[in-house]
Length: 137
Ligand code: TYD
Image (cartoon, rainbow, N blue to C red; front, side, top):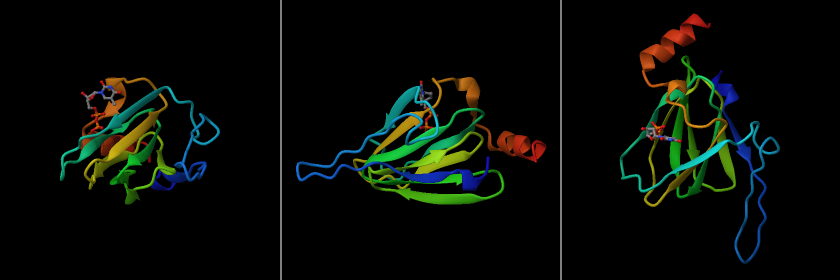
């Protein structure tokens, strides 16, 4: 997949003086069926997460609180997205290397995933990721 397939998606936003509400429905707002939800929290300042790609998995990443950056890399180009609002998120298709950094204090990174956890789906070696990218060019 290409960098241009990584997209910021705006979510429905029900604004209310009692507090705002956002919801996400599989297939309606993001292009896959949600099978798993996980979140990163208590990330110490200066730390980075990610540092891998997935063979099949698609993800949608939201800054549920605070903010952080997501750097996506398709093997050719890189792009940095700043996520800092709860009413939009970043769609990442399969075969995109990602890193997350610049976590603000107290931030929560909510991730919706198209598959259950499977370590075999991970590419954790950047050289292997590039080799597969070149082989499929
Ligand atoms: P990892 O995906 O490498 O974290 P990140 O990309 O956010 O930096 O996962 C870190 C560890 O947590 C790793 O040992 C696998 C485990 N893990 C699960 O057991 N289930 C899950 O759903 C996820 C996302 C990770």
